Image 1 (cartoon, one colour):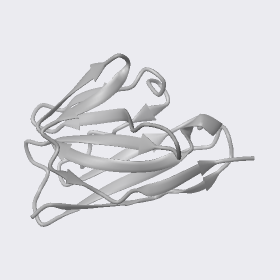
Image 2: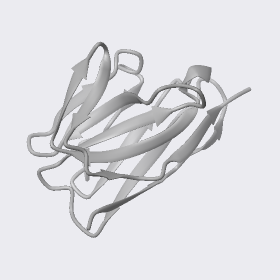
Image 3: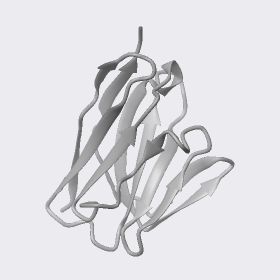
Length: 127
C-alpha cells in the first residue's frame, strides 16, 4: 500500500527558497499523478502543483507559477517541490497526494482519483 512522507519544511524568511520532498513507500509513483497541496489554518486546501509521471506534464496554480517548480528528474519515485521567492502567504502545511490526473481549475490545481495523502510538512515564511 502506497504511503507518503513529506519532508523539508521549516522556517524561512521572505524571498528565500525551500525544497520539499515527497517520499513514497509501499509502491512506486509510476503512471501516477502526484500533486502538491497546502492548507493554512482557517483556509481551504489549495492545489499548488502537480506532475503526471505518465508523460511528465506539469501543472501549477496561478499564484505560484514562476516561483514553484516540480523537477522532472527523479520524479517517478520521489517528488520534490522547489519553492523560490517565498512570501508570507505561502505559509501553510504542505501535502503531497497521488491520483489519476490533474487539471487547473479557477487558477488552482485539482487532482482526481486521489487515494494517498501524506501527513504534511509545515512551511513558515516569516521575518
